[in-house]
Image (tube, rainbow, N blue to C red; front, side, top):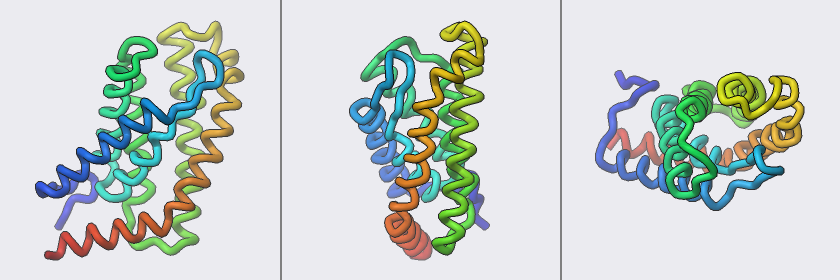
Amino acid sequence: MQNRFFPSLKVRDICILGLLMAITTLLSVFCTFRLGTVVKIPLKFISVFLTAILYGPVYGGLVAAVGDIMNCILAPSGPIIPQITVIEFISGFTFGLFFLKKNLSRTDYAVRVILCAFCQLFIDMVITTTVFSLWLGWYATFTAGFIIRVPAGVIKLILHIIVPITLYPLTITLSRLKSKEATH
């Protein structure tokens, strides 16, 4: 029986994960929109989402974390912050948890996308703001940081719902191709 949290990989899977990490890096470097100096709206969640659906929570988290590190190296806006990298892992892992079950109907898929989007909102608004305000001192108080991050949080919530729902046909096709390849 295959472990859905940490599936074994073939050479082809390792190559696909490498491509997904490269796409995540490109999206985080070139497709990140800023609101002010502190608040970012990255689109790298798209490739992390696809990774989590195809390979499960652990690889989804790893791709998110490596994407964060690569973003800090290639487009530095400050030092590598390990706490943020851990939050990125948790975010990718969360995508994978919601989509462990394969062959979801369109309705089940949409419900999981919405629930996952609200979990991502919690991770971003509460956990990340806590790290920024309490550990790093970027905000005077948690409340101030939370209020500053609300506009970006709302935009991210909308993106985390709309984009994965529009990717439904792609995720079904990729999942079928991956499961068909696994049987050969």
